[in-house]
Length: 124
Image (tube, rainbow, N blue to C red):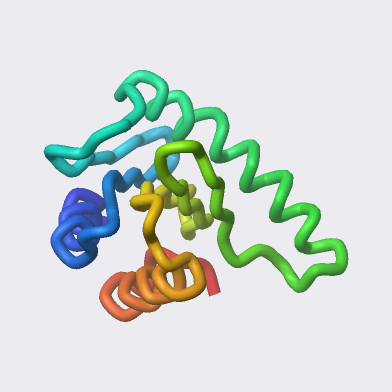
C-alpha cells in the first residue's frame, strides 16, 4: 500500500490535520504539516506511534469486544491538540487534529474519506 500517498491526501484535504502517521508491521510513515505551533517533538511522536498507541488500541479493543460492540476509534485530548487513533488492517493510523476541531463530525468524515479511497486500509 502507498502510505505516503494516504498521508499526503489527508494533509491536502483537511486543514485541521496537523500530523498523520501510519504504522504497519514495524514500518512507520509519518508527516507533519509545516508552520504549526505547540507541536510535540519528532522523537516523542515516534515513540507514541511505536509503543503507546498500539498498547492503547489493544486495551480499548479488548474492552470494546467484551460488551461494547467493538472499537471504532480513540480520541485523546492532549493540551495542545487532539490525537485520533484507529486500527487498520495491518497496524494503525494516527491523526493529530487542531484543538478547535469539531470532534462530533470530523473523525467520521475523515474515516469515510479514507474508506472511499483506500478501502483496503481498514478491516471489515
